Length: 75
Image (cartoon, rainbow, N blue to C red; front, top):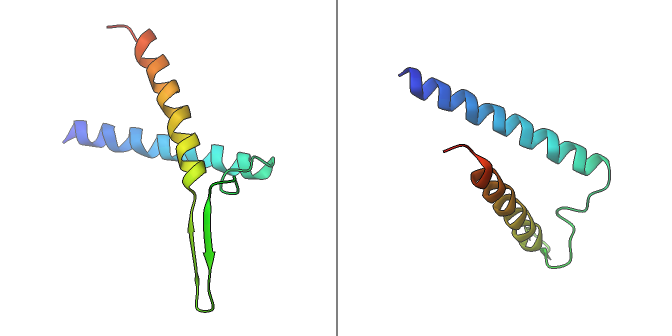
């Protein structure tokens, strides 16, 4: 049970940091969510938005970051 608590605190901390990064990215004009390739369909009764290009960009950046962390993490 103690291990689950530790993992939950770690996940909460990571979500807090990710939220802060998204907040500051929006505040300082980083165009995540408004890149060419993001899909926006607007109709009379609603709209659909899927940030395809932004998702791919974030995925590539996280892959590079996690590979660098894994490479230099002591084994």
